[in-house]
Amino acid sequence: MARIVAGIACSHVPAIGAAMDRGTTDTPYWQPLFSGYAPAREWLAKLDPDVAVVVYNDHASAFSLEIIPTFLIGVADTFPIADEGFGPRPVPAVQGHPRLAWHLAESLILDEFDMTIANHMPVDHGLTVPLSITCGQPAAWPFRVIPLCVNVVQYPPPTGARCHKLGRAIKRAVENYQEDLRVVVYGTGGMSHQLQGERAGFINREFDTAFLDGMTRDPLALTRITHTEYMREAGSEGIEMVMWHVMRGALDDRVNEVYRHYHVPASNTAAAVMILENRSAA
Amino acid sequence: MSAPKDYDDIPGTYVYDAERGRMGYPLNMFCMSLTKAENRANFKRDEDAYLGRFELTPEQHRCVRERDWLGMLKVGGNIYYTIKIAFCDGLTFQDVAGMMSGVSKETYAQMMLDGGRSPEGNRYKQPEKKTNG
Image (tube, rainbow over all chains, first blue to last red; front, top):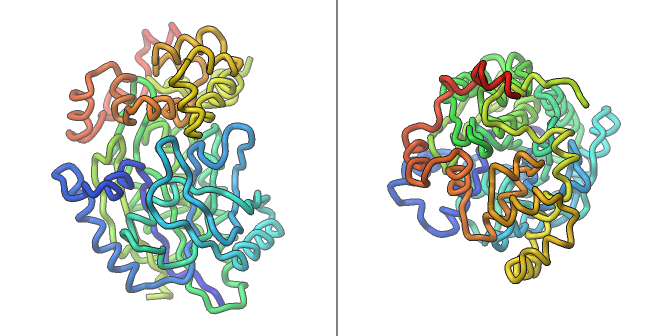
């Protein structure tokens, strides 16, 4: 039987990917951020999962404003790397897990989550930067990936509470899959940041710290944060932290925080990586 | 006209909601076209002609031609889309963020190195600004 063994929360700042692609991670600007990624990479290599469900948002790459899916699951064999306006990132294409992905799609829809299904979809930095951060620069990604997109570009995104419930449904679906697979779930995006307007550059370390703490201590309390509160307290683009709730909902009620790294700035953003393990898996 | 939103009092922030979505659709779809190398080349070759293919308002057209990043947000631009113009120009997200907040690139970069723009005094519009909308 398949099971979810851990959750990874990870920012997906494009500049972090660019620093890796250009080999500038040792510069004084980037070194403090990247030095904190090494323990997460070691932990993940040791865990060696079979599949990762990566919850992320597309940034006007695969989707434009023509069609805006609130929740979408990718069921393809392979997901090509998107050209985001300056050529695709030089990273391996992402290998999917169609059987588990279709199982998830069917289970989630019958569990009343009306997923959009994607058979062909380029993936952008929202998905590839967390893979780069946690896997480094391998010739091929070390596990299969099921992309799960959440709209956070057109207001309103789904609520944190809804995202948490989707995570619960993912957990149920994975646990009903008849194959021994060890699955990790990534919640990507965040932390506090604002990319637009006169208030660009907004960072709220206090909010971020409380959010990181709450992921272990009281995740349900965090699901009650309103969209306006995210935008006011974590910056207009900080609202993408709703995606962390999908990851958290997919884990057990009780988790151990295995690792945390938080750094300001990564370009315009407060960046974090945090690892949560189910206590039952420990 | 929809009712005032509880996020309207967040300063310096243009939430890409239904209203801006309606207004900004052609502008953002122009930006989306720049994800193709061929379109980027055509845009660079003759910006006015290329923009003419999209149904932009005169103000949206002006904002793009003058690279008025803040102006684009006010006429329905979505930052994830308008940034594609900046990438086409060889600018970074941080360059544009500095321009939108009205400070030099260096000042903005230093603010970020110092921990970013503080929440203190930046959560709510000042009362005098509120009355001006």
